[in-house]
Length: 160
Image (cartoon, rainbow, N blue to C red; front, side, top):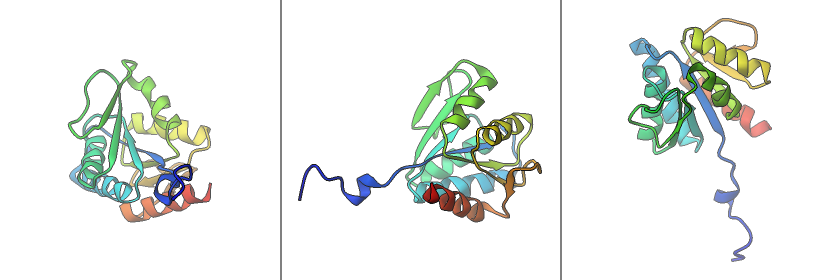
């Protein structure tokens, strides 16, 4: 074995995927988010969130339970208990730009105006947004469930 040649496992890129949604989410939205986190972990993606509760915590828990890596880009200094890495921005909602710019693609689950701002940033910067019961605006690719959203996003990631 040549030590200077990376193995197939090492050569595989680990995509960073942002999962966005409201800090106060419905049980159904939290279930979708949890499933998204689990599915992304199974695909060896790194999950990025705003690090708070609701959709962010549910997706973090799903990825954590699935053995994935979870990064929280938090507005202050604390995040949900499922984060492996906490990036303490202390810049409030302005962190939305950092979150989206750090991702290869975005999955939006439900959401309010903070989610809308992240969707806008993603679309403006050419990042794909796959949405599950989120804002119905041009550019967001509607998905019926978590599996469809993750499958479409992974297909996109593998095409670039």
